[in-house]
Image 1 (cartoon, rainbow, N blue to C red):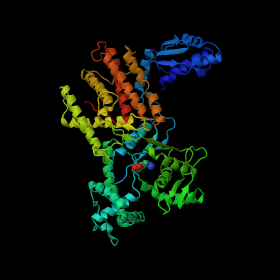
Image 2: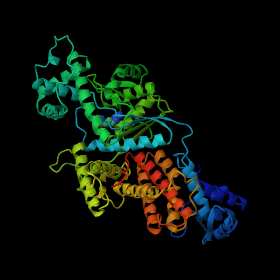
Image 3: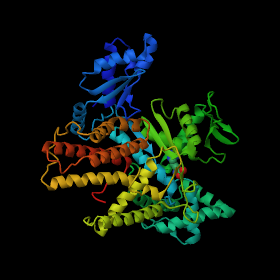
Image 4: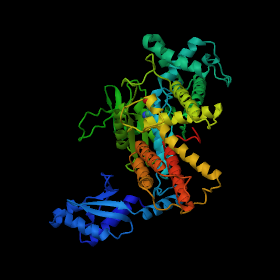
Length: 597
Ligand code: ARG
């Protein structure tokens, strides 16, 4: 379906042309004076210069021609030369019915040419618990992925585990100090290794920080860890077996954590999967003359003449021959081109990593790893701060584990739901349902709190505000959906059939209803621009507007007690559409609504 704004623009443009003016003046935008009109066209102001007359002469002429147009309720020419436009209510009602008929697309056309898009997000590091620093990548990445999928693209999410490098050597070394007798450390051992891991997830989570601390103060420990890393990468059997235990235990735990966040990855690849591609890639860079030695390291120059700031060379190998973060990301691109051949790769990583991605992207293009037809995008997100404006910490100043943070919000939500229930005695929610609902609402609170901000900006993680049932929050959106669900189930309980409402939506009977329809009509344009700009916050702003529009309508209109059956059906049908659109939107944001709360 065409976007409403385009339909209007086309109509007005046609009229400019038939009045003898150039088509470029017919562009229509949303009104910036909603108190006066719904849409506006300012083309006459610009046209006046070309046609050397007063702008209102042009707008008068166009308005007169549009007066009888069935698309509009009114088109007013206002001095000095604006066109103030209001939609015809019957036209709008038809647009609503068409949206509803449009099989789950609600007027949004699928991409004509589906792209293959890899979304690299999550980025947790093996053996380290997820902390709040990982929240944004997971939440924004999941939404960016879902939006692109809804647009009809072939989207592959890859968690891109941090599973390579010194951290593995650190863990092995610390484990060796704790349990030196384990068979994994016996170099003469040639038998099979045990299936059971020699540690639990909580041990593992203690081992890593201990080891990391020791390596900073204890030189010999660090050397042992470096050696272990090298031996591991060189293929030492016992260490390889330990690595797979570390991976299994850690990945199981990560999966559980991401599951709780309603975040799902198509691929569970890691940095280590890219390592086999490194030697050949390095050879190619040397052979083709892209890489050269600089201060002992192998580098590729990536600066360009038009740079306004210094872009240092991309380091491919350190002086000791070891690969780095950039090497891994480049080799991962080699792998992705081979395995997925994507049209676009989107990376969700902290904005502070932007230089890294500039270097990697330029190097990948220069060396031909990625062709011109593949787009590389880094979505750099800002920091999640506490109420004090500093990076979010626990009460005692430590790094907050994601699991604990979510638990805190779940508990807070459970209290609210119980309180709410006391107010409405008829709401008989049992403990199990209350807990499940609390989780659902808490997740919406956290995700909406994050996603409603432009990704690149820092934001304040304010639990009190995020969990409020009022204002621009996730719970408010869910509350609105729950309210609609409850009206619909009452309608059904009285014998109404919500599946038999084809073309039931009639012209709006009041301003609130028309406003709701205008808001619903923006669905296709909103999702398209959220996709084009990888901007979930646009969907949040939209559903907030939509929820407000619905609540305005609900406030002004008696729905279930309406005596005119046709009118009641029209309302119910509009409610169904509103609910479905809100649900489609929150699904793209990565959360869902309960049936009651
Ligand atoms: N593991 C990295 C970190 O914790 C993030 C990875 C981002 N993705 C990438 N392909 N570099 O900072």
